[in-house]
Length: 73
Image (cartoon, rainbow, N blue to C red; front, side, top):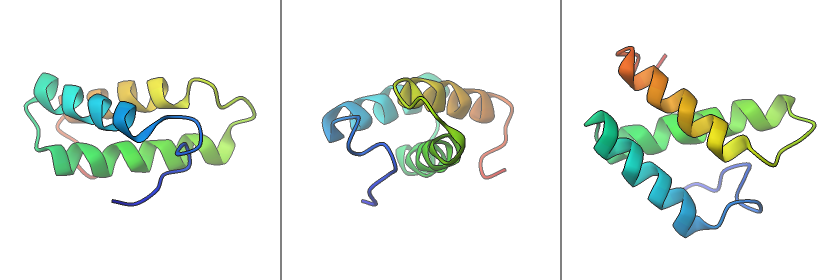
């Protein structure tokens, strides 16, 4: 598993719980959700000055991407 930009902020077990929950909610494969989540974390972290809620925002963005059918956009 790759280490995301938020790995110092969010414990690995919490990241995995988020990925598992998103996969269940969207009926997407966990590996796809993990990839999208890591992409969103990196994108958000790159432009963030406040990083406290990046994991939450990334989860919402992944859920929206999967809901819209954009698996790798």
